[in-house]
Image (tube, rainbow, N blue to C red):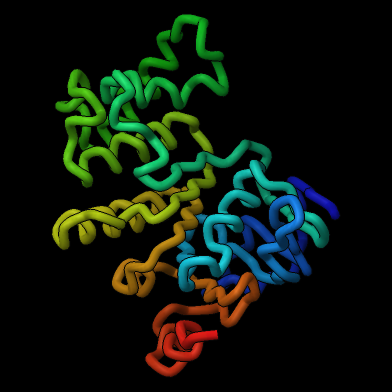
Length: 247
């Protein structure tokens, strides 16, 4: 198993001539005694949105964990064209509502990788936090408790925490789950805008509208790659029916 960074000159299958931010080659991963991903070969285009689609248990969250570096591949190769750690935003339920965290404090936690949890933030850290909050439209919520927010507000605060890490790779697990239609549409627009600003966005989703708005899509079934490419061509009724059919 190899994990590599800053590779260049790689042949690309990324859409519209873009270069890959990540390349997977025959990658497998899982947990103790339970393999989940099986020999995935795919590319994640740089400065674009990529949607991971598949039924529950298809390996979407595990793949995000591998890309984030919190799950180690058991075999195969993972190459990154970048030298900063990914910013990983887990599912909303992974962050407890009972934690006494304000929105600002939540976003400030994104600087811990640079500063550590016990050192005071510098002027630059505070400016980075301010910019991330403004970018995600949560500046006016700074003093609110995270658990008091609506689903859309909470998700924007968590993504602002990711942006505060100043990574060019943003990984999101089900960012539109539990949101109303207006909030889902807003979230999809925000992800598109982030990619236009140079951030590589990878999100696992069951929301087909959000997936179709992405630049690229990986279709997973039982931990294997069932399809990859442009969502408009890939997410056809027949392809989706095949992936979601009972085992």
